[in-house]
Length: 248
Image (cartoon, rainbow, N blue to C red; front, side, top):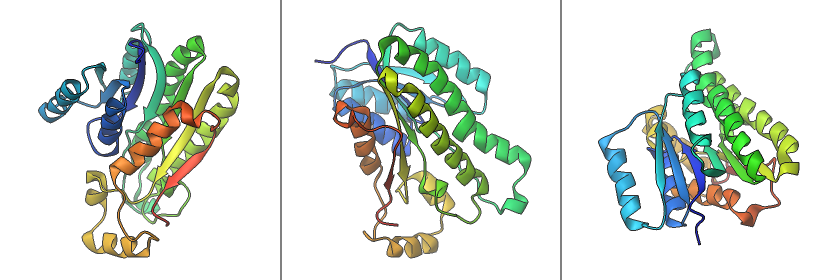
């Protein structure tokens, strides 16, 4: 039986991995608070279809830009003051920048860190306030194998994900006594629009052939692990990172 007041918050809900996570949560009976930068007809149709196919769940919506931390704070306050119990948070939204370190400006570094680190950190601080009241919660941060493996041209992206990895370990040790768990998922090469925009077909072919499984991963394969980490089936797992990379 679903608790009508318990919600999982998911950022970057409107495409790729985030969209797959939302669909998986809905199909498994979770109430969801979807977060995205902006509303679109396609996303609205997607959510309406989920509501029709899963009538027992509730889906709430918030729209904010992670480049605007004040906007993030305002939306976070609306979520935690809604009277709902936030039992899960998935920090999925992110951005990539491709350039050599020498050609990456301070402005770009700040933008990438705002989206991939600072805004998720602020949102997490607010959501934790709700979880502390209920002494219950699971947070999953979507990291990247780039946080550990050197990727040429990804200095800003890789370092922002490494920062989130480190933060996740620290807060997991601080909050374990309150029954709040924090883990990371580090996807490798996953079939998303972001992947296609940042890799040529030739490069993808070379990378794919080097993988143990010799194929690109699916967003659903990330969603399955996220769902596990949000559930009670992972109740003794915290402060960890699970790589989902096809054997890089």
